[in-house]
Image (tube, rainbow, N blue to C red; front, side, top):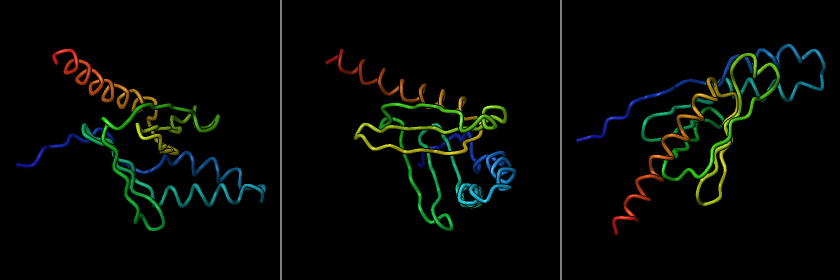
Length: 135
């Protein structure tokens, strides 16, 4: 019997990241940022479920990273740019218990998703504390 996962959010990076970098392409200096946002928009997929966070990315989307909530120690949400704060996308910085970090860029609804991850992480901390007090 398979465990059902409820999908909270599934999608690619925010199109506003690509649009804002396209407008700034007028200066040739902004070319690497435009290319990075284009590649991120085409190849990166985010998926938040009630059990895990999945990021598919890399060149042609061949790299996949899964994080279960009990491994998360800290989540920070940062607006990507001024345009990002108006358009509703930003960066999620996820720190795992082993010290490694994952940076999710141009995430739509980033504040809502960061709060959801914090709530899910707190559930595991509460369960661990309750089982420790019973022992």
